Image 1 (cartoon, rainbow, N blue to C red):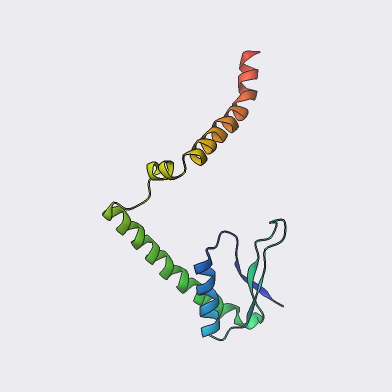
Image 2 (tube, rainbow, N blue to C red; image 1 turned 135 degrees about the horizontal axis):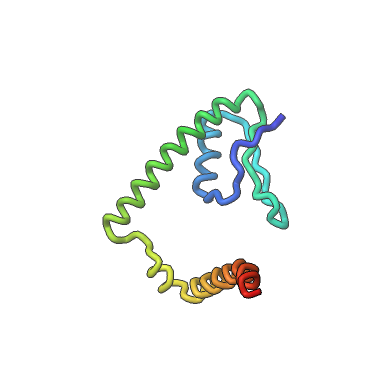
Length: 122
């Protein structure tokens, strides 16, 4: 029976490509399911043979450790260089989106506070 190795929800394309690459390089048979039409399932990378699961998990753990170290080093380097993206950078690039999200946060917080306000007022 097939085993899910990687759920593709919030997985960048380069990471999915790397996973498919190390599975191919180690001759582990897999297949990929596409995302569902309504976004209920994000798709996944499945192993065809149950016997490949321990090796695939070991390879996946090694890959994730390496990717984590690389990304952390890139972020640290960007902070040291002063090129890391800040809130001000995002606001300059997408002011309407930032304002809309801030308004949505204020609206949701006010909805959450409304019952307490009504109780205290009574």
